[in-house]
Amino acid sequence: MAKYVAKRLIYIIFVLLLGSMLLFLIYQMIPGDPALQMIAGNETDFTAEEWAIEYARARELLGLDYPLYVRYFRWISNMAVGEFGFSMMFRRPVIDVIRAPMLNTVILNILTMFFVFSITIPLGIAAAVRRGKAFDQGIQVFTSIGLSIPNFVIALILIWIFPITLGIFNIGGMATPNFQGTTWEFILDRAYFMALPVGTLVIASLAGLTRFVRASMAEALTMDYVRTARSKGLLEKAVVYSHAFRNSLIPLITVMTGWLISVFGGSVIVESMFSWNGMGNIMLQGLLQFDFALVQTMQLFFFLVSLVGLLLMDLAYGLADPRVRVSE
Image (cartoon, rainbow, N blue to C red; front, side, top):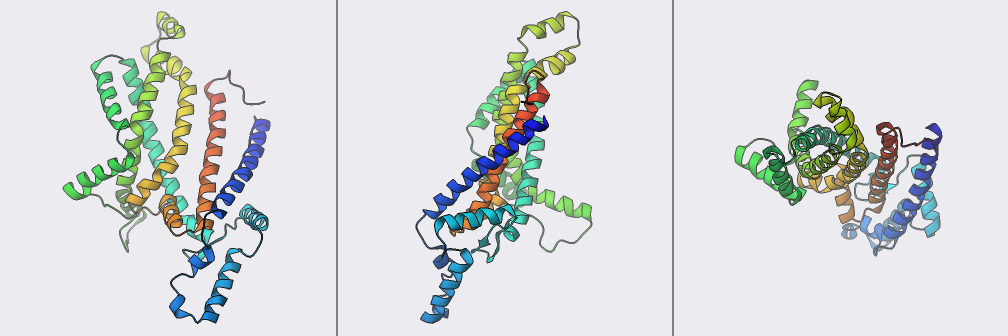
């Protein structure tokens, strides 16, 4: 197992390098001058000579005076030691800009993952066990509707129901301004503001995952080993969870890993709609302002999340099914 993980980590580093090259080249080919964008709006404050000095200083700060290959190696070597460049939009090092948004995005998605898995797995199993009955048909109808509604529409519906109609929860923000209170009160205040963005991501994810859990379990329940377990007189709970569910985990792990990777990208829209200070909101601002150092760093983070997610998926295969060997 350790040898396999070491090989995969080397693979992740190699793929990250290739991905970083591709990202760097793409952003270098975008028309425009980042240094000019950085000092834009200050033309009236400078004389021609002062403007030239400021422009040269901006190019030096952003490293634009070096050849393309030198800029890449400087960028990737600095990232290896935790220096992610300079954000021209915020006029601060990128690491200082993304530290809080990255934590906020991770918290948002971990909570979403917890609620989604807590709901979809029991719901999908219950629908599969009651296959063809009224409960299963109702789940099928609601999940079919859920698949056809994009997450930004769900966000608008929740905004109309709760803040506008019922007057509860906030449309945007992360905490009450100048909040003072105990640690528990602070947690409750953050949860109050987090309810709508988490709710949007959870509702948007329920339909697809519930249907897949149901389909995977329904197929497993028709297998011969399930009939054999029932013929031995085992309790139905043992048949469902110890036999059918465990053998349906392989396709479930694949889909859930894919969802885990995609939810980080899907939170970009939700964070922007609810003014959540996360990586999605910051990345959107960076794209609009051509802040390439900021955007490249965050996209490389999403790339890393995808690679680590695939590694965890392969390791989970070995835990779910002993026949799957991950030691070679």
